[in-house]
Length: 118
Image (cartoon, rainbow, N blue to C red; front, side):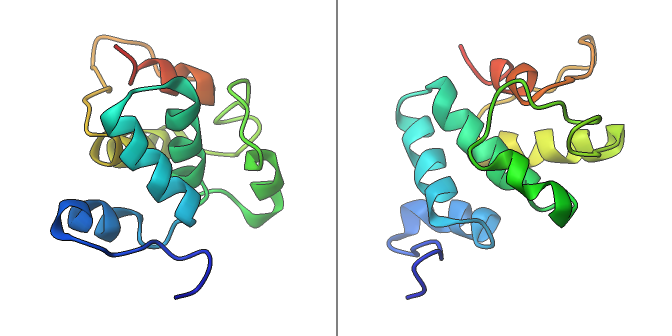
């Protein structure tokens, strides 16, 4: 197995494997751990890993290591529709609903992380 690929062991992780198959192993492991114990640093790893799908390669260095103050639009170049896509992918990966129509759009990774915490 490639060292950065996501392991596909057991059916319990099958959905996550399909969802996060293109992400680094660290992202998969953080998503699994978050589902057991929701911690902000785990959500941050998952959100940053998912964001890599949409971020211009020139900005990828900003996500490693991820920081809550990273601005989704200004720093990563994500438009509002892409932020919604990121949020929906994170909802699936983290197993929690976070996007609400009555809330203002998240501006930073930290804003988005906060929506997944109890």
